[in-house]
Length: 287
Length: 287
Image (cartoon, rainbow over all chains, first blue to last red; front, side, top):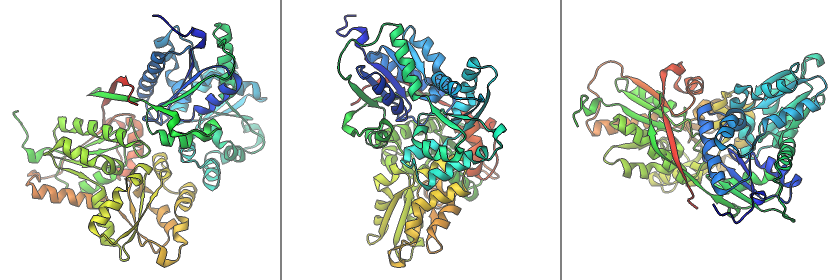
């Protein structure tokens, strides 16, 4: 194959179930401003967080195939659910392309932040059911104490644009109030936001957890992991100046632009988003 | 084709994006206990309520095709979003099979209930964006005044099992409190629950709307419309005794059983649900 672009100057591919991964994209833009970035949000099939292992894996492989066909030098799985359920399948399927998820960087951030090594993981039901954070943290510190709590409704709040206000406060209190009220020795000292939607709700979450529990998310540490991997493979772009950013969605560019602007931290319009389609063509009885 | 079952004894097919349509199934079981019922919840791709017209139509046609292949005598589109966006496409595609949606029966129920003919429609964003209820109501009464309000978060609350309690109360208040506080002449007197998830939240919704606004849903009137259509076509079953009920989902039977039992009003287990799969096989750039 004759390439007009050298491999270093191919974009970094970023994949998420929707707009949540834009928080990771934002961190990548800040840390690696010269890199080209190609973001795919699988908005036609979101949310992944309440779906089964098989469905999430199949959706993730399809999205990754699309980005690989477009040409990328590294894949970031910016969705916690897909990282928790499908990372090994993606790595096998795409080898030797480097694939970086958000779970391990999040686990590193939490272990580095925590004094007591009693950690709380807030994530979707699909992510917590896999105990992916627990396993990643135990690889870093076999003595850590980890609690995982599913908080699926935070996703709907972020999607509705209700990141703050009375509803966000009450939902956060309902999930987390009892943890704040524990005695200090039974309380975790660090909470991981194990879903890319959750950083938008950091205010209400911090209030419900109280002042003694620190909050970490994986966006910044994931960007650092990408940088390290690109350095290791000598794949950093040699271009100067700002890289290109292309946004792709599988459904609803208007909604993607409206909700996504809050995640990315800058305004963009529906016209900035390329729409692609995943056509299911057959319906087979599998069980 | 040699049929071992007469057409009258084929099941009624019921299709929804998930478990919400079980409220319609429940009404059908009560009104037509001898009928066989075949229910398909497209849980792999829920929610439909935040997706585009094209995606909802494609998903609905696929689900309908599956039920038709299994053999049904009538299709109930128990999902408001699919009824609002895809009913005409379904009728064209499946003719001469009778297809009944939930929007028109809901509109009839509301117009019959309302004195002032000032009506409020509570639904998902996809449904309200189509103004399907407004158009159905105006066909019944061209002088009616209709307000449509998207309340997407009610879906997530019902799916989380938080139908009552402080979170449901605050969410309902956030959406509906300002309507209650209007002067009587500016207030609708009837609210339509234009999403099959919403009957589960009837308590908090009624509280937020106040005592002067009556609430109607389309489950009962849809069952009546099905009965009338079967009588008209001489397709009522000739069997005595209780009909069979078969539940099918495209993902997550455990979650389907857990959440769905509240909608159906009776307990069932994951083992009671047949799992089918929709395999998307190609990924095409469409725009």
